[in-house]
Length: 230
Image 1: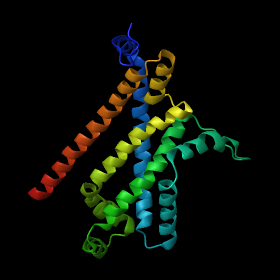
Image 2: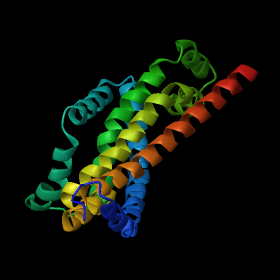
Image 3: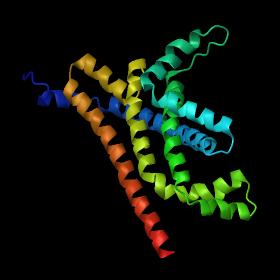
Image 4: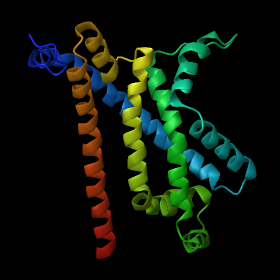
């Protein structure tokens, strides 16, 4: 029997445990969807603060962005997993699923905030003035006039952040996240079939990230065509 890391028997054994990978992949997708939803909410919220006329709101948005853009995701997850439960008087214990959503979502939200802020600032000032002349307040102006126009501008960089978020879920393996990377690593450790396990896990990530990129490019082209038709 060949001892090669790519030996056929290793692939046969790994594929016979493919359900382990599908279970982890399902959890990865769920965490990714919920974390991305949180990231978009945090991104929009802080982008609006960053473009506000109030200095205190702009300052807070800057602090939020700079903090998460300049600290590793792993440290943030370790803080939620190991430190937060031991904080005197207010210790909070979160399960790994919640830590994944909150930790990755808030972290990615800082990057989404910068993407959306750039999109808002790229809109011509005349659009803001026209909205103000129609009696729109700041919130209405953003929701009905400005943000819809930023979609085609921010779609490519926002997609890049979404792809990064999906890949970042693999970090949860370090705190027993039970997502696909954790399941793949657990199987690899028990079977010693490292190469097939990691290749299959990587293939799962590639398929979902590539599909997201293709869908986004298609949607972006559709938006461009709709603008031309108008």
